[in-house]
Image 1 (tube, rainbow, N blue to C red):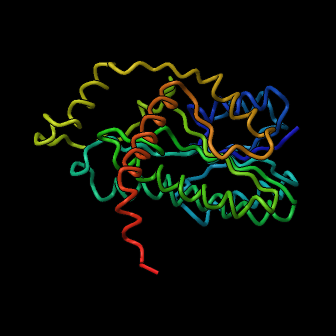
Image 2: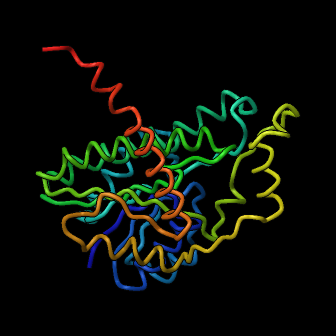
Length: 275
């Protein structure tokens, strides 16, 4: 039996993950934005589920919730950063407030949850971090510029701390889902459309999403199970791609970047100081 702390469990992958863990006998501390979001699960698993209200943009509240979770359960084996915010618009269309909310939720919030957990992980001698990113942490799509900003940032952070934490028996896995049938699309925040972008790739993507032109093939149940299974893999896999679209799009982006880098090899080497 493991004990998990999961942020953002009201809907989507976070809720399915919580349900599957409780069904298999694990204990869960689940954070939500609205106190009654998991009432039915709480009734079904009164001794295995603890629910805490948390806005991950509130750093002081993060520390309080994380400290309480470790103190109440004795130890937490896995921390899952799942809470997220998705801003869908071209770069000019977003408001300053939306940009700040995007960064504070997906980057600062995730970092502070991890920072709050680390002293406890070190004290107990082990721990595992699952950081929800996206295929959009390795590739990009028009209209998701600010979302990509946060996912590329948190991947860089987690890639770094994985090296720092491995000697302390703390594993880090970056989870990179493609498109899944969750509430993610419905929860995307938009901004007033600017006519200047209607005949650009931003407008094309906006219309394609509105028309349902992008097939969604990711199986939520299978992907969540893969996340659960990854915790038993040692050493922790640094990245976990979930969905055929995630694999294809990320691979294409990585191959393209490698080709561009190789094309600049002579220029890069010629820029060195002659010894």
